[in-house]
Image (cartoon, rainbow, N blue to C red; front, side, top):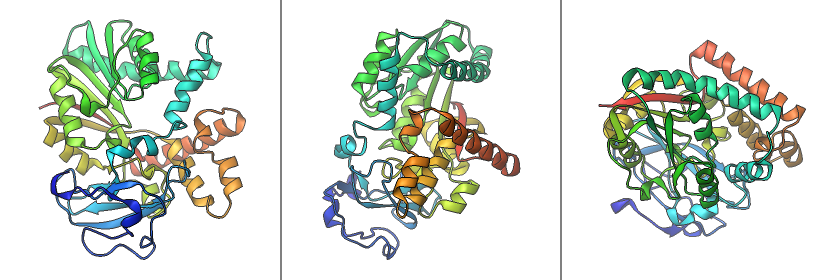
Length: 362
């Protein structure tokens, strides 16, 4: 982070602002934990001038930190978390019960069986969606294809993509959770058990690189996207999914309770303008933006709203982690209602809180 780096324990920060003016009153309080924090500049333009647009707590994993965090907006439009936990705190803010790791554990327990009819149905639907992008890749190159998932988890998406390519793809992944990486590798995928920042990817090698809900988590999004750009063949495509802040639900709940803030794990948040600027800086061209439902963000929003006054109701009706694991009529009904809500918002506004971006090398 250069001159902006500040690895002061959170207990010493006292909510002070290092940008344009003091922090708001509801942020000015002594931190209760000793999370090591750093003040950062805008990763898109380098500016340190900002306005505070949101504050909030980690309501999903309250045992990780009682701190109040803030999301700020740069003059260029990029929203980012500052101050934010240092990289040394990754094991704290991504605890062992983090939902992505829990999904891996659940699949590990059930592996060997055929899985539920719902899981098979969802996999089939995903494969059908991926075939549209497979057709795009096939239009520009002949197989066999080299594809990579950054943040591949236990390889579930790679399994789907391999089927979508009708077995015509060689699959690669990057995954920082060693247990998940080992599971993915055991299924026949070549996996680097590292953070993407630690990888030296082969240049000009891949026909398709995809990464779903990772770029908002990384320390240096420009380096992340540049690594993707350089790893692509000239005819290759990248497919990135990330939250979108230019949406109706952000405007309704964004100051405090919007679920996609995912405090303190989402470090950079984009809209079309700021993501295009990121892509161009990394040597990528946006082919198109697509907007897809993200029912989970609504679950997290309602959990955040209810938790301070009605914690039992919040945890029972809108479980932030178990929503990925439990199943049952209530969970699937909830996800169906919120998916329908997103589809209605997309019909009215053209956008949702989740954007999927198709890119090519410049």
